[in-house]
Image (tube, rainbow, N blue to C red; front, top):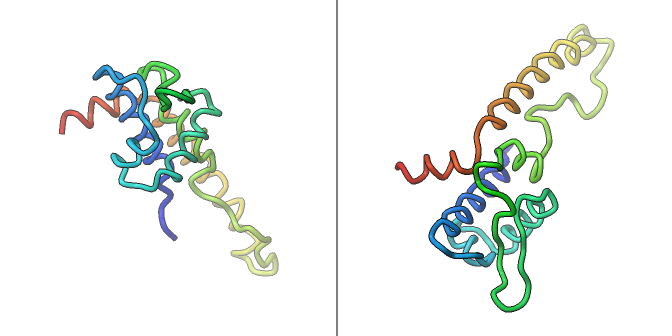
Length: 142
């Protein structure tokens, strides 16, 4: 199964918007963001739409149309971005009930639920501690 890149794409877009703002550009078009991400503009518009619904970006229509950050990059955590574009937990239990006649099938859910819960909490703590400003700072160092 392939890893989900929605958080990465959204963080990339937000960091690019933050850098553009720092350089004096009020807005970027979805095509400009897509060129940086090297993705289809439709994918970027979908991601930016999710970020807009979460209050992380704004869109301007008409003359001078484009996207901009709704808040300072220091005030946008990766946890907020994650929750906006893909709030699913990192792991899931079986979609259907395992064989309860089997000793492993009977005990696998309780055995893994606590581990998965702790992993998710650790992930959420880490994402909450990093802002888009942090990401941009690290990007520009390299």
